[in-house]
Amino acid sequence: MQEPIFFEPVVKERIWGGQKLRQYGFPVSGERRIGEVWTIASHPNGMTTVQSGTLTGLTLKELWSNHPEIFGMETDSDFPLLLKWIDASTDLSVQVHPTDADARRYEDQPFGKNECWYIIDCPENATLIYGHSLSSPSELDTAVDQGTLVQSLKHIPVSKGDFFYVPAGTVHALTKGCVVLEIQQSSDTTYRLYDYDRLDPVTGMKRSLHLEQARRVIRFPHFHYAEPPVFLSSFRKRLTQTPDFFVEEWTIRQTHTLESSPLFQIITVIEGTIELNGVKLSVGTTVLLPANSEHTVSGTGLLIVTGPSLKIMRPLRIGIDLGGTQTRVAVVDQNTIIKQLSFPTRPAAGPAQTISHIKQAIQLFSDEFQLTTIGIAAPGPLDAKTGHLLSPPNLPGWDDVDLVTPLSSTFDIPVSLENDANAAALGEALFGAGQSYSSVYYVTVSTGIGGGYVYEKKLIRGAHGYAGEIGNTIIDSSGPAHPVLNAGSLEGLASGTALQSRALEKQTSSIERLLEDPQERTRFINHLATGLANIIHTIDPDVIVIGGGVTGSAGLYWEELLEAVSGLVYPSLRSSIDIRLSTLKGHAGVIGAASLG
Image 1: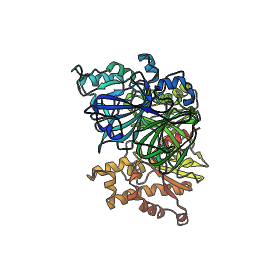
Image 2 (image 1 turned 90 degrees about the horizontal axis):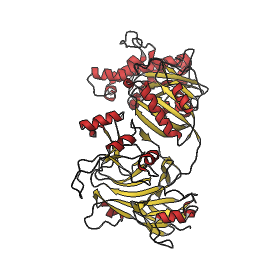
Image 3 (image 1 turned 90 degrees about the vertical axis):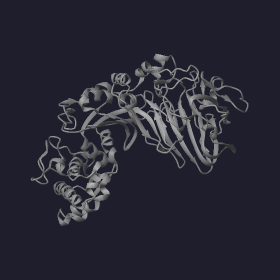
Image 4 (image 1 turned 30 degrees about the horizontal axis):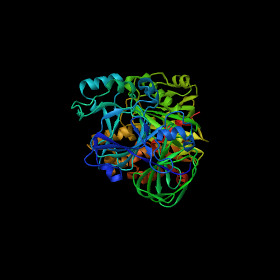
């Protein structure tokens, strides 16, 4: 079977539906509140049928069972995907879906519901509900009992063309005015947490909630999911690849020959005028392309393409950036973050909770990737040899905490621990602004000021692990006292914390506004330039790379900083000074951590 297969969509009325889907070519008649149109479905609650050709009238289930050659995969289980268009005429209920394991355990269903949304349209300044701020089931219970659940929900901004992957266990809701293409596992299992006290039009009673079921499957804490898009060709951009499906966005501007795929693919026309093998497709059309078939697509428009993922397991590393407010766990391929999960650190809850959450995140990734090493970037002081935090100021009470053993014993792969500034230095030296140099010194100007030195692609730690720690060097001995560091230290004078304190003292609203003042800018520049000149005179690096949050305002001071440093070093060195901004930016630490070991 080589010909594309078209299906008759299934129209679904919903209490929150409207009539917008008529604009996309779907049969919305009269005043019906159409919330969903299922365009590819093989589910007891909705079954699409072949619309034309020799297979006309067959359901997708019959096609799947009797014609495995169309799909290029084993068809002894249920068809794995479900595609639908959604018109949220008003807010949808706040809900959560089970994983595969939970669906089998609690519902006797083959699939959980990992899903994703491509935003077709939405109001200006729209937001979605994606995640929560609760740390445990008991906090959920308290929020429900006290009526504060809504306050714990996370709202994120959304625009036309945005894409969101919504893993099972994520609390979420579409909001009023959004039109969405949803790609998901073949499941219709949804647990409602909150429904705005809406009444069922049939019974006149409030729609039922599923609090106990939701409590069992919600992920605590909420892991914020990030997956950078991957540009595969001039017209193809991969939005996600999961064990269940991939999703790509194709921007069509000319004729393209689509390569044969060993598995079936599904294309949906989002906008424009598209021809498939010379046949015009209107917006809203969804077509199944059989496995091992070639096609041409032309015209001007936008397609969303999906299908089952090929199972490819390649060795990858885990990088962990443990901070005082947030922890990030990422799968890293050299300098590329493949996927990342992040969550609040909550230092007051103690190290055991954070370690447990890190384990959860790594376990999720281990189900998808072949993991070879784990690297942790953490605030010092620490002992990289033993894998212990010592007494980090950013994590009060975390004294002599073993971070390495709990992870190495759980996952049976090598685990390394490194100071966060050193890890960022390694990341920049291997893959960032320092990758072309042998001798790289990295400075982070953020909440604090840290540094790291990399020579010949290897970290120089010093006899006790403190090499490169510029933050405690004394810039002005008459400067302000610091609770931990030397009076007049570089960190006490030029860090983000110091600048914020200065802004409050000067009654200025932000660091950026403070640095707009010529006198304050000169003060900051002189302090930082002195620290950088000391580095140059001490180790004479090929390049100094500067990163951290304060560099977000670099446009205000960068040229003046370079000039000030030049004025403080030997004249013979001035022509060879090379100071650069970080290119990995906020990712330097997690990429460097993944490169440890």
